[in-house]
Length: 497
Ligand code: BES
Ligand code: ZN
Ligand code: ZN
Image (cartoon, rainbow, N blue to C red):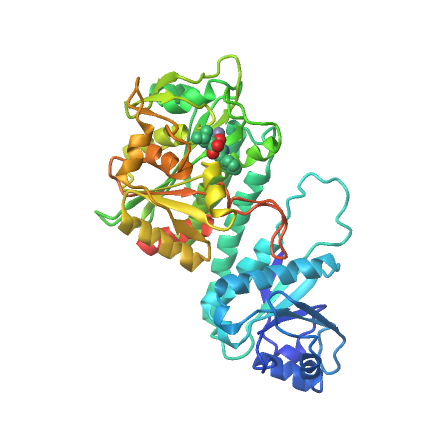
């Protein structure tokens, strides 16, 4: 999709579709819309008076051939109540506009920013929305899209915005949205087309293009490092595991600066192993690598944003299969850290591979850790697909991550992880067991297990099982992978530098 900036004033912009947004309030035709309305002889005001144009969130009002307006059509998107309006709403407004117009076979559009958003942050959110809205999951459909492709989008900042600031926002928005869509592309791939080895190849390709260094550990090196927890999951599959390590090093490294470690769960398919999952809905378990893919997306963004700190992504990748060599409930495994684990349930495999991923990230010198994982069904029960669950061993570090999530417009919510949860993973035979002894608190139990491998290194765990996949399409987003956490992690790295 071609992106550009449009500097003509609103009524003079020649485009198949000029888009702007309207707030839900009495005096709706204001600011930039006044100019359009004046040019069109008051037709917009009259539309508002009839009650057709209300400004309700994501209401679409499409006006054709307004006299005095150069654009062939004007789309006014409802932006809802002004006091609820922020970057997240703008992102959705822009995304929904693009998807709505595209469905009507519009191939070029111009998005007009309103008075309040003619800033770096405003243009960034709009560009993010437009690019994220353009994503679709229909990768393997063979029929043509019969013209339903948005080819070019222009952003019109109107008058009064500082062009340099707006261009900077656009550039940032593009970097972040393209990184997030890269993550979504990986997550959308079915497991036959994205094995651990293929994921590693895709990571190598991305790292080469972005100028990042990359090291892919194969099964031999994984065994040499004694990553017994990861190997225990991988042993049931014919596909060998990989550990993907992507490193960003800033031009100037300050001594004593933090080293951020991003550890992502990449189970390219989770059957559950011998503790096999029910077949209903099992096809969705191709997205069990969304945590790892989020880390790759974040690294792609950081290569362009260039924070002043070192960032290392560690992505353990494997299938979880019930093959003849698969581990069995009750088996005892030794993690890379030396801790022994009784594997009560082979379907709680994410925490096993993260255990070794975290140990390795610390060995590589990471001083601060964030992991992302589609870890538990329990977090879906607790938070649905609305918020990611956030767990920590260090409240200050968690607050930094949550602040980044707020700035990035990604919903995340803190969840409890008191020491008492440790009691639930006591094993009779080994140091710990991989599931809780009771039924409740599954998301915190999963987090408590991972915590055992952090050894007090500041750590945050993002459980994205509910938020990494959208089961039904929204006006602003396709059904399928969301790319959650990419923008938050990129913001986090930038905020530390
Ligand atoms: N990959 C699943 C978690 C999951 C569930 C992701 C739903 C996305 C949607 C994970 O490996 C798993 O199976 N977890 C088990 C843990 C249980 C056995 C303690 C779960 O949540 O049921
Ligand atoms: Zn599982
Ligand atoms: Zn899993």
